[in-house]
Length: 360
Image (tube, rainbow, N blue to C red; front, top):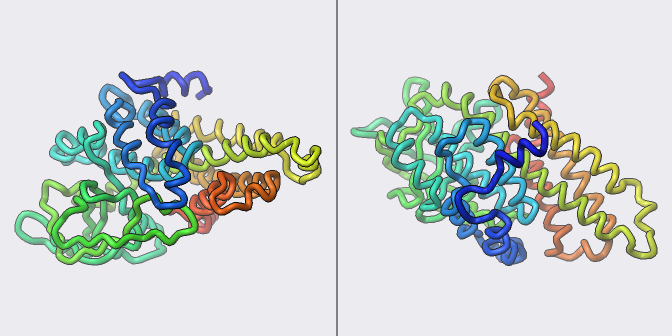
């Protein structure tokens, strides 16, 4: 699908141009997000309040394209916040696809309308389904629901009034998927903010000590069947995180083109080379994002996801070299994007995970 068609799908909702929201709620806080672990919750809520997250009267393809472009545009300014947006989009996808009428009809509109935010605690389960880890949560059946015990190492986009998805091992080789409120009794959120980057992502380790989850909060009673339905979208909305970083890195290279009397022209990688690779990658991605049969093209999607990780690493490395000493400041834009790119390479599914999946 061409850029014009993508732009039409991405057209402005009822109110609130996206650029205006970025200027008001995100751009002034980028350095604070990076340096002080500030969580740009207001930007995410503003997207919902201004119609950017609504799924009303939209086809699945329109949701795919609109969500992807929203993540990319956000990532051009701040990938940390775009990652938070990805978490929220993932949680909405789970509720859009559930057979649970309560979650779909009562909770989903709250997420779409900017009344509350969601997250995805599926890093461990996705590794479990790829044969890389054991499940970290256990579900014990009780009257009216389940009791959840165990610990998740890191879940992002969390706050007291947020919700997030989990998958837990139940009895008889059954796995369930549920939607959990962050203020649930028995749930302890332990802050994690010592990463090289993205410390403003509101990331916590989640310790469950007999957390009661009522039946009305069960997304799927058979997670094994449900996960293949949501996995393509879990990956789809990740790719534009890298696209935003790549695009801005190329812009940073071009900005430094004439420094030191044109000395950058002697560096091995130039903006033109990256721009060509970027255009080709972006076209491949948006063709997939505009596909009505995304579930049948998972391997193509995983390949694009892997290629995006490698091109992001190449782009940020090149930008650091072109900008020289100015980039080698702790909170420069170039160094922030360098750290963002390495995060993306280690975001589930990680580069090594993808290489393994694509080798078979």
